[in-house]
Image 1 (spheres, rainbow, N blue to C red):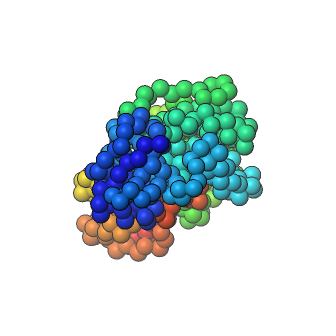
Image 2: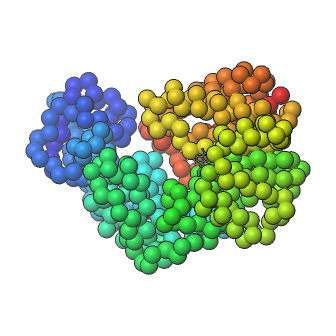
Length: 395
Ligand code: SAH
């Protein structure tokens, strides 16, 4: 195994078990590892620090796996990690109310670059590092042993793979290609998921708990679900006896699937309307028409892909929230989210405070929302905390 020597003074993060070593922290590579190889990280004195995946094409040159020198990172090591991750989701799946979740969440589950989502009997996998790519035969074998899925489908995110110098094909890794639509259950609501064509790996299961929390405020209310996708918040709200629910999304496929999902659950389509449009434009159109709401959900895509985009993204979040606040009846509820990892909760609250000032509104934070248990945050890897939300009472 090849030794990689860390620069003097760069030990702290490794000792604190942060799983990333940036290329700038490396003093010397004693040999020529192939990308994806497991290397031995040592400090300037030559003492062992950790084992990790090497990749000279990535800004994160080593993704650390194991800090105990005596534990060999072999096939069994990976099988154990897969088993622990799957076992960690057993309670969530045990009631039967939900059969879709994230089974493996990359660094948070000690498998950097591997994401596995369960859609009933089908698994969608994202392979984002060359190290994980190398051990995929073992991972697939273990997933089959533990879960006996009908299919395992590769749904890797193209841009992340390119950062690691990997190809970008979507492929069936095991079994038949999944059907066009897979029916899944979440919070006892049924959804049709298009694994191959849908966004992300098909469904945003990270909002499971928040959909229920928001729906608890929907009874008798006029609800607006912005960035609705296939209807996560919409369907939960429709189940709770709202006055009406309006869904807005720019994707025609998302809106069509949402309408199918309303039928699938035999929910009252008479209380629902959907608009395929840009949310920013549509909110302004509501404003002009004098349409007001009691509950508004804002669940936009990631506005800040990196820290450097944070200032611009903050302005976009502020503007979006400002306009939404103007559309709420007095005392109405805004459930607003940011899935940008670069924006922390304190910054998000500040953005909401600016939005309130500009809108001439008073805002109370009545709840703080986050990602659910199948998207764990590892204590040594705060970067894994990406989803945050605020329930705001707006006066
Ligand atoms: N709330 C959804 C997930 C939202 S994901 C759920 O619970 O499942 C973000 C969604 O925003 C996607 O469906 C995408 O099509 C949509 N979107 C992105 N930019 C948009 C825009 N400017 N206007 C309207 N929808 C947009």
